[in-house]
Amino acid sequence: MSSHRGTHNDLHSEQGALPAEHPGRARNPVIKVLDLAWLEFAKPDLVASERFAQAFGFTTVSRTADELQLRGTDAGAPCVIVRRGPRSRYVGAAFRAAETTDLVRLAGATGTNVEMLPESLGGLTVDLSDPSGVMVRVVADTHELATLPSQPTQVLNFGHDVRRANATQRPPHEPAKIQRLGHVVLQTPRYVETLNWYLEHLGLIVSDFKYFEGQRDRGPTMSFIRCDRGSTPTDHHTLAMMLGPSNRYVHSAYQVGDLDALAAGGEHLRELGFYRSWGIGRHIEGSQIFDYWRDPDGLLVEHFADGDLFDCTLEPGWSPMTASGLAQWGPPATKDFLGLAPGRDALHELVSMARSLHDDNEFDLTRLRGLLKVTNS
Image (cartoon, rainbow, N blue to C red; front, side, top):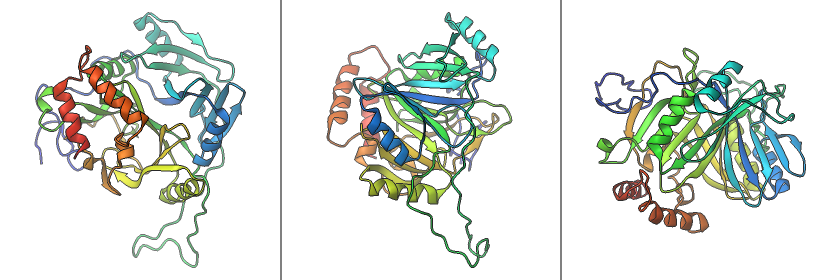
């Protein structure tokens, strides 16, 4: 076990930072966002998108010929906004500002403007692009959707600690009701530059760093990043970012009530013919119980339950990046989840690898070797 200053053994990583390694937070960020508000996607078929979304556990807020808004049971803004487009793609994320004045401060620091959002959402936004070119919105004063009835969680017996007697356990095969948006995971060939942008502009802080085996001296290649809400615990990661040969959406994750909701909801999806990419298992970074599915357009989405919550006092953990290190228990990570299954996406990533080696970015031949080692680990 490491004795380096700033470690927090037995919490989420075996060791903390070495001297002069990335601190995982900005000294004086422009603002500190509170949470993710929603994610935006483009899809060619909104009817098929809504059909999967409802089977996955979303509730439809509204659907027009050109836009679909989806929500969870928690109060707040929609979790997901899907607009009609020629191809399926991730567009960007909206983060929730702590107060409206933060938008003015952010706009001034970035040379942008505070704009009105569409009436269907209400409120204000500052629209930016991160160094990878991905859209980032910071929003405030949006319409507040009321809380919906939640899915009952199960009463559990823990060994000899009996909490349920003369009653059976029968979770129905039905959609696992989404409670809220949890996080989004992105890949970029400009990893450190993009990471620093989020820390400096939005006040996010790193919970865990990952590095390629044998390349720790070259710095991290993945980070799990949370909001800084001071003494209020928040999700282990709201955003995760990894170094790779292309700018790519990896997956997004949505909280459900408990393991039974997740597992029975998965049976419901399987019975409808949808494709499970990987699961069920429990992660290491974040500790979530997870289950990954492909939507009709091939985008990866996750049900999760029982995730870690950290306040601002914990410093980043550091650990090597391996495929086998993605879960504490569960089936091995699949080729589909790792992006290695034969198909269009894998071919696109191979082409991106070849191109990125000739571009001005952080993904060089040494990093490629490290990534290939991860996929075989």
